[in-house]
Image (cartoon, rainbow, N blue to C red):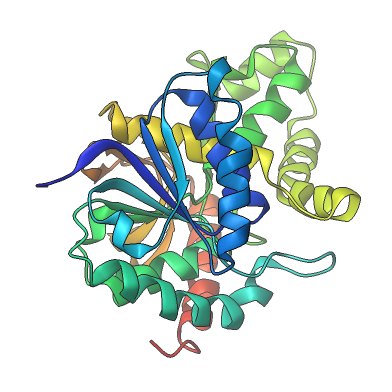
Length: 316
């Protein structure tokens, strides 16, 4: 990567998710420059001003509204633009609307000879990650989605609450689609190295099947619940965006379940979904071979088939 300012980030889309992400990144101290881009220039300027007014209480940085010419030297372009999920709507209902929006955005990024990373956050994130790779022409390791980073955080939170332990000591992944066909990888879940079922029994829980089903359902339905109660979700995903940016900017080589195009993993080919990957300075450095039991493998392959069926209807 040449001519990249590792401490510069651009956010395309200043709705709830984009502006919450901008605020979380300002607080993080990871960047010294942030440009906000939106079809509604006034909205971008308003968000930039509002966040900038808190800078006397944070670390110095430049925050401003701009256009696609301002992204050329950014380390990361975060794309949150798109129609939001409404109550009663699934993420996949958004496909047609948001693919059309991406057909406007991604070529604008690509024609700037952009050398950084595109992080796709808009939903449905797996379909749009695939779309962004195909429309941008950039190497696949530099175009990936936030995937199930948030879902996995929700799973850790639920397990932490259930077991009465720090959720940061819980190691568990949600894999596959960021959506209704996602799977909880229970067979590899552990609490500080102790297999999950054993830890549950230590805490007095023995009905594993029922508890796992309830927790997985809570995770899967949490976005719908939040949207029904407050019309949108944005803080959790903003923290997930911050975590992914941290892995890139600090070259942490963190293992995160981001959405990327698969090539033969569990027999899945040419579809974007979430699997654990090593994320660092140059994007995805490699997939992490996670062990899944036969039931989980079948569910993951089913998730991939569902996404494949949708991709086949999209004109790119």
